[in-house]
Image (tube, rainbow, N blue to C red; front, side, top):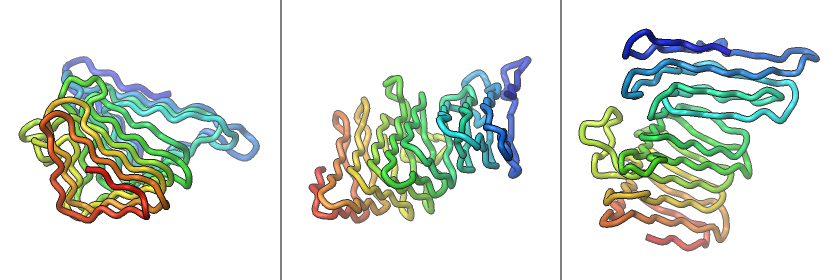
Length: 239
């Protein structure tokens, strides 16, 4: 367990380098990893940066818990020990990582996808921005980034503020940028939480499972801005 504390209103960034952390070896069952970083007063920083693999093998049964204020850039490997990551913030950034089990990422404000985000076969992925439904918080998939779920894919958000840190469209709840993509083996669902913001689809959306549906549901007066192909393998596509 490692924790940074702050004597003032500024964040104290905790970075795990490429070497990562491993708690089990040989015949020793993996123990828990708990990392906590102090954020700034507004909670807007990526105060906990993970650039190496966190590994709690050997064994099984460990649970991954993600909170805001985290930049996760390496795939966690769960064994017997839990992995708990808390940046005490309101946003999360996900790079090139794979979740081996079904995963829910839920934060107070924004989710920023910058790499190839995947889940293993038959494992679902849920991305929930603005989990307190106060109207501020969205999901952006950056150009060059991608999402590929081995199971279902569910993405929801409310709105990005003007001049946000992620260059997302301030009129969007979900912003799938040109040059990005999202695929899933199960159903795909994009929906607005609250407010009147749009769902921007400028990267290809593909469903690879026969009969599985794709659904886009803006909230309120929000619209779907469609600028890329949406492809389903015999399942319904609902706009």
